[in-house]
Image (cartoon, rainbow, N blue to C red; front, side, top):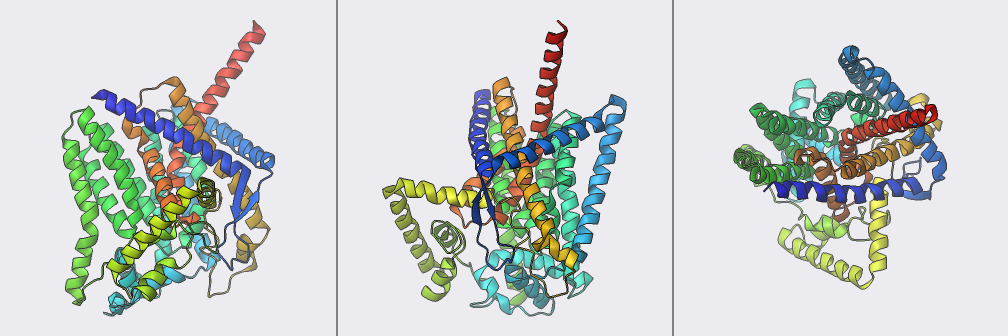
Length: 515
């Protein structure tokens, strides 16, 4: 039975190495970017002068090793310094997030605005958006986020968009803290925890997204907290960890359906370890988790049907997004092109069954085209892959640029001026650093043949699942950002092992010279 877990670990290591080698090489050679007028969401491609980008990556790695070593030097002071660094980073996230809210004056538009105004209407007893042909009729999966925003607006004021943004800042702080706890549980080396905190402090897209009034930040924070609690449960036997994990993931799925990918990652580990370790309580935990995550949406739907007397529609079939993800468009391969709306609204007149059949037919037709021309298929999916994973800002600027207020020249420069160009170049090197260090860690573990337990790879499973899902689904660089954050605890471990290797090589060289 133990062989099942060992084989699972080895398969994940191989898949992870292949994936992160592709990510590292792709992001080193190519960079996707948006025009600074932000008039169209087209991820233009440019071939990097990779030596300059690589130099920036090496500088960031060197600084992180040096600062991290200073923080944890001296066994008696290391823990105190780590707590101090954690406090500093959390305060930095709080201050930077609040300052950015005041500077950016970002306004909810598109889907953000539809949910924001729907929440306002809900608070006045207006549930028209649930009816035929309206926004929540199309997208009933947005009901959880609408309910959340309606609660916050009812408490803090109907027009208080900033309250939602402040909760994003609190979510960012929770995300950072949960990731810190995950890193401490995955690595015994304090330098890994220091590296994680330094990496998170320098992850500016996370701060920029504090003004994005949507579910991205809060669902990510809940998912990271769920992984932390999951590790408390399987590594420390804490039953409270299982309860909190289930609650966090159920809430995350309500806010954002893509959180199911993290749920699946956790389920995979629970099921394998239930068999290999003969811990049948893990099966009970897995069953409760599955019921909670899949049942939270229908329960909320029933609540609003009873409250409003409106039968809530099943919404647009998921197959339409998969079909759109297989099409060319005016943006890039697999990016939004209006197909789903056109089929569901104009062709099928909101009939889900007919729309699903047409979507499936389109998927089959595109699959045949790909099979007939494998080179085109490879080109299509590489363009789709690179447009999401080689865009170093993960859409944070283009998604938050809209405003209906006065924005200072200083704030505007972060979107269109030289500060923006500096941040993009910095993030290009930062992105490669995270990809490369995670690759190094996986290669190091495979070479050392360390017998890791499967729960160590729960974040990797989620990342692999996210990559596969977004190669099938509609593409957008913003969609993959949560998985980038999930890589950072692994990258921090990679930096620690890299520093250890460099230290051993230096010691060996000094010994050979003295000899």
